[in-house]
Image (tube, rainbow, N blue to C red; front, side, top):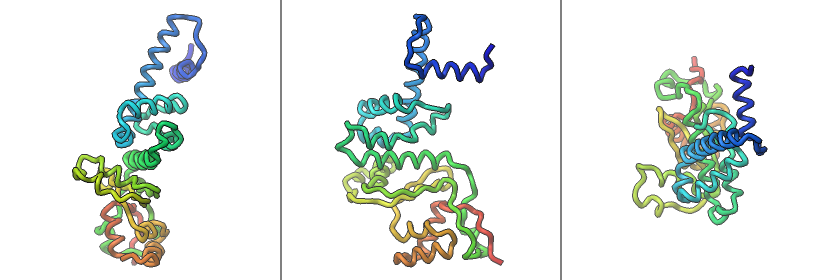
Length: 242
């Protein structure tokens, strides 16, 4: 007799197999399970990429999702993380060829999902810095922090589709490349468009190096650091100065 793990593995292989069973009842049972699994995966993609879906419409997104599911079905039970290659798939999907910005928006949504489910850690904040820190101490990103650079205004498009966006947000978008910061201050994911000095600050391995990088780009170091602290970009594990 198969144990539970072996049974689940064998059943999963049957669902993934393209071979038809000789048993009509088994074919019907597998078809039902495949349809259920496919719908769950499609619903997960709609949930994980809501802005991308809104930009193309339900029917077009469903067609793209169905094609993706065929080539990259879920490999684990946590569908909240399903779709790690979806942005690349969108970039290559012919029907979306006239909307080259979609892949960048989907890639940003992937960062949002990753940030949402990243590990918890206390963020570095003003209180943690009240006794001062060693400028040469390592500066660590919070586990939820992500950065990206897009050749299209992916962050602005994403933000324009959020419930709190102004009615004319889409009309106000300036078309061009964007540098993007994704963080999770508190329990909510936040997306920001950042400038070159802020991006340079984030490349520093220590506070001193980060400050030097930002200053070299013409940035106001204190303003940038305060902004990144409010965004929860760093973890509270910098040793305090003596």
